[in-house]
Length: 274
Image (cartoon, rainbow, N blue to C red; front, top):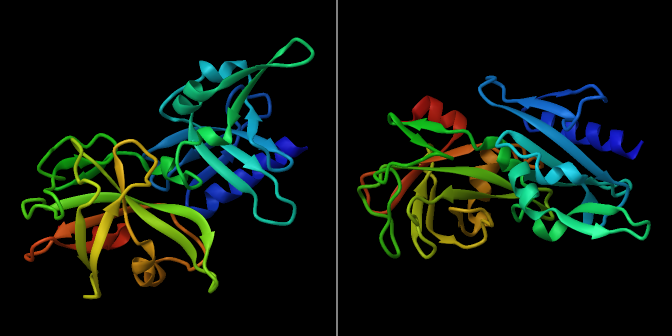
């Protein structure tokens, strides 16, 4: 009963974030949900593991160490009574690396994934947005490789950098006015942009957000955080529901001013991007 509840809770959350979700047959081995984006360009299989109350680990089974694929994802769910469930989203490759074996009193072996080994600081929904992005004829995103796209110098980003690409990440926290906090993480190439750089932003309406630092805390390989997420609260509220942190792509295009970039939501980029 708990397992099925977790599957449908995970399916509802994925649907809320704009993905297409279909439960598999209960006899399907290794996949509880099949997921695709709205354009059907990317698909994932999802295995859901559910605990009836918050704990420090989930049982995953002996196959977890071998069942790994770039398109296979785990969603770990903790039921919290009448409160919103806790979700931890983790790629199967990461689970395979972190699975722990623990002898049970019966003599059998338990295979566990621990909360402390989570893949990212937030809930991790951004793993469903790691497909490559096409920008200016180059590939930006999980397989970005052109050093002319992202580059930086200490304290500021070089003027020759024309486009940055990032992702919105859900922080699973709310402010007193009901705003669900979120942040933006940027992918690094050859270590750039660096922690300690700063950036000035202007949106499509001309609103300015000055001197925003790039900081640690992405908890994801080759990513840095756009610091002080509260400074972009107005930008988020004008584009997204106040209580829903939609995980999607964000773009930054260099203006004619030093260290200044115009920030675009994914839909704005499609309309106005260079």
